[in-house]
Length: 293
Image (cartoon, rainbow, N blue to C red):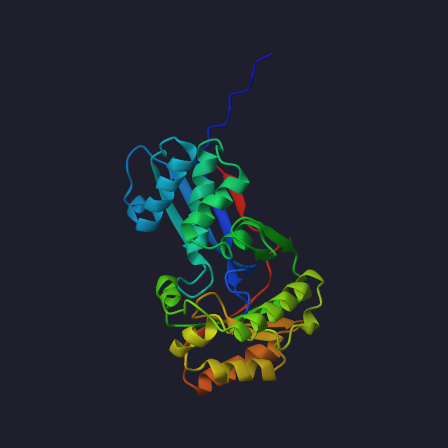
């Protein structure tokens, strides 16, 4: 009996969801995957390609070589992007994960899923974008461990994405080294309750839990229209309103029809002459998707 020839993989497409993190008091701990995607295509090539010279790409390729003790193949890569960059929606995590998963597939998968995750988390510096992008759903995480639950399909995330970009690196530099004990306790209380609401699907108990003392008071100095949009969203029935990641995206959550919140945000942003897009997103409970060709 003849053995069929092994399929030669020439390239890989990796579809990865956007993420929203922090949920107010869950700084560097909470994340969720959203129905907005980047598609990373990685292909083998016979000569060095200019697309690999981006610093993030170089760093990712070096980490892959370090983890596998083998040289990366010559590749070219491209991204079909839906996710705005530098807006707190996890764009950089999708690039790192897409490259790692794509090259790993081209090289006959020397890294297991947990190793790809560990590698991407180390490169990103925190796990809250990486884990939900990879696994989907709502994630409660530390660098070493995570708990995951699915998000009900009736939950909507309404993202107001302004034109301004906010660098994650710069936005982390403005945060204080220490916080008051009272503020820390209040953050722990509210964050714990948010986690319970998601894991028990008690979304209607979320209102009032998104107040934060760790990062938002410092980052919101650069988003002067925060209070007006927050008041509009909550007044229209949003369960919560928070700064997604390090911003500049402002995120509302509803359970059920998001129309009133969308209309309130449109009306208020027009009144304040704020340029931005409103994206109505569903949770993504699947995470990363990969196909080879």
